[in-house]
Length: 315
Image 1 (cartoon, rainbow, N blue to C red):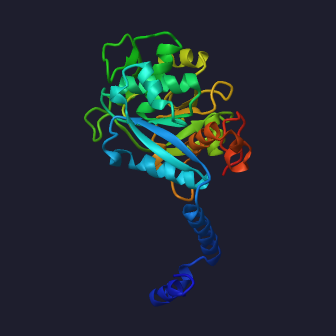
Image 2: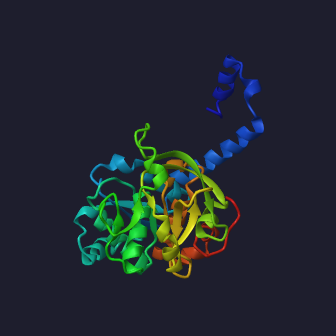
């Protein structure tokens, strides 16, 4: 269209030439041309990432995750194979290890209901203890909290009140302010765009290149504030929080403990765009690439996203 002058002709017909910023248009065009070239180019390496959900047979349920990973693969020159794995049948550590033995990273996505939850918790444990790159999303964030409570704090009956209302250690529950919303449209759901305050020295802040970000939420349950100090004292860092209230929104392990162990209560896949891939996904894919291809760690485009423990400039 550009080379034939069709776009200019359309602007003339609509009398819109005065609405066009030529400089910005040129910059945008270069960005899309570079992206198109990368999209059409063969990828020099392959990695496998498991999506550990319970809607594996309904691919549309994870369409946004699929596209977010696609954006990252294009920018990081990697063909990313997504493996959709149902956690409902993962009833032992041995099954988890066998299922994940060929994976270079995993995503534990969101969802509702108890089916597949214990399998997700086992997958989180496997990722944490074997240093397999891990990204938890919404329910995946909550599963990471429960796994840590059970296997690091030693509270084997730790749970969420969503799955066990009578649990003596409710690490995940509806907070009082949420319960007051019962009966309002949306019920007790925390919905829509909200600001997240990031620890300036965290992996999350490094990935975003910022200390305040805005992301999209859709969930009901939160980390119980009474357990936050115990979890952090044991090494689980809550690096993203609500700007005003004691509501945890991002968790991670330090670089000395894990190359990429990070989870978010929000849905980062919803803000990924072709020219601006989502930072948490970029961190996961970069870590997966280095796990499979260690020499890639020296490449600037990969090193930018690795968990080195020091913040980097905004991208």
